[in-house]
Image (cartoon, rainbow, N blue to C red):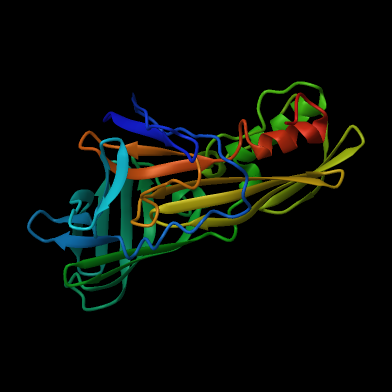
Length: 312
């Protein structure tokens, strides 16, 4: 795995400190109900077909750079990064990278030519196993449009994806049960990635009753108290994902927002919330993650809901 830096940025930060890290992380932020406007992905990132190398490569209209411990946008800079290897034959297109392989069928265009619209028919993960419904059902209607050297990929969040049967919801349910029993081990999931990781069962080792369940909410009765856990307005983009999680009980609602996003010109400063910004060895900030969970308004709300600890 390549080594990357992550840096905390915040309104109160007097300086920017960076340390080497090799995986995603999270930071504490104040509570807000919806992610702020990060700027248009399409205005920043675009993709080109390289017919000589048979590759799809990502480019950008500028880059976010760390210069003397400050983040600044360079509109003249460009990235040139590998996205997919591709091959095609008549009405079938194959896109492959380390994450897996997609097999697409033509829905418009001329057989034998790359130009046209392609729909994903099958997807195989990095181990070569077919994954039903593309990425375990998280996305649907994944379409590739190719015109000349222009490559555009779109998808939408599958309406049937069950957020209540994810690792993130299981962690959140466990946090509620532990807190109700007087134990505090954190308010729940610590990364948006957990809300896209399916699990086969609900938390074990606890006694509770499921009163009502949809694919985005679960209402639970335990020890005479009802809890409603919801995933609200989940968003999926090629460069940006966000999930708003709400916990409601006894007339109190606690809200936490998880998001991960690639850096656009508008989000380059990251000075309105504490975030974790990830940069490469050349000092280019390429993505960031925020989570208003621990040591935040959400945590204070969570503790107050269960009468745990200090609330200030």
